[in-house]
Length: 458
Image 1: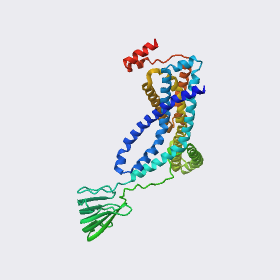
Image 2: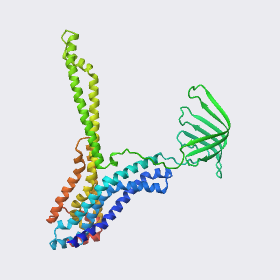
Image 3: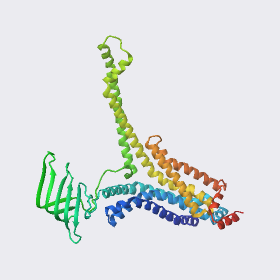
Image 4: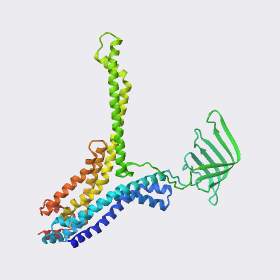
């Protein structure tokens, strides 16, 4: 049996890594299209670009591995069935359950590895990727000096230069509109000048000659000031092309492990209980004031008072209490929604790895029944099941965030449904009960393969 188990396991290795490569390629290409303009516009070096890709490979792996398991299972068992090896094994007294067992055990190890990956590697990668992307968004490219074109790359400044000497840093006809940290703009005009960067490359220095400064007094807009100069130096900061890396302790839910989120949930549940106790206290206080208010009503006027007038009077007396109760209720609703959102992420860290096992259960019998569909049927079925699975996850997450269903069912319903269907199909296949026909796939095959398949079935 060890030889058989090793043989079946080896049948999965090649298709698994091939599918993993294809899925990664698709996800990376989509990722490149999203970030291409950002990367080009910011002038990033190769090392930073490599960091962006490596850090974003983490979330891609969380999606790609379960799908690669499904593809490899369909292709491996489809190949074994196509070459009648499954039939030979059954004839030798080997049950289908034993044939599936190596892949199932391997999927358990893959699922365990993905659980560790999702709780240790993925949160750190997501955290670093978010910080890096934030730093990239804030990065400013080096100022590119062009003739007769406004330079708007530096926030707070608009720079116009009539003539630029390409062999040196000399410029002529400089106009600078300075609005940085000013309510009213300041205009600087000079006949000529020299442009250079500070040693750290982060400050642009204009050495201007024969010019004027025009500005309006911000304290008194009726006053206007014009200053002439022979030489003036203007420093414009934050124009370098260096990427400043920042650190932050703040983490989103996708940047935390399951244990970290469970700790956050405990804190939120404590806050909810505190708010509920506060509401109960305010209600008791309001009731006591209402009872006192009844006495006030009768003492103000001995004439009989209608019920509606009494209620309006009591509401006016306790208007602040009602607003406080409403505020506490909104606070509780917000915290419960955040709890549900965190619970969804906690379950997702285990539901996605569990899909590796689920896809073995459904992929093995379907691969055997698909037979000569080969890679086309394998990839097609994989895509169909994964789209169905992902639709369940997205829909479940949305319903859980709206507090319409519990977080457990939001994340595990797809595993339970597809796993149950896979187990049922596996039992039927082990009993050699045919209940799904793949004859409809013939019309997509070339004629020579179609004739061969019909002849083999006869």
